[in-house]
Length: 154
Figure 1 (cartoon, one colour):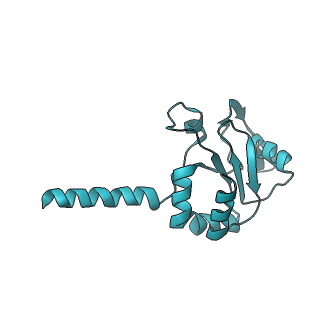
Figure 2 (cartoon, helix red, strand yellow):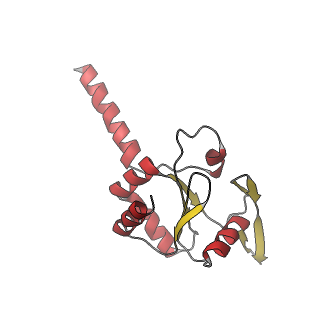
């Protein structure tokens, strides 16, 4: 009986880890050799003041189907381009540039904006395993829209 309870608890913890929250990675983890397999990177670009970004965090990224798809098929990185810490991504260091009094933007966000010709939040950017941009969406996505986006961009 005790063994059955242990197995049940282990299964419960595994299901929480898989479906409770999307597994997120740091930029540092992406560049380490410790990643278990090659898969696309999904960069969720958001800010603290963006209500649509917060809506996606607390709705879209909490959907069990979205979580399962992300955890199984992508490396998810949350990125706030207004934080002042340098970012090391794809063998390059990106720094924060002040654009006014108390405001600024990471060079990584500026570079992505130049490629997509759009700066808006939230943004979903997908890079392939070699860090080549393969898809982007610059708007709020519902769970259903996110699933469709992820399926079509694999």
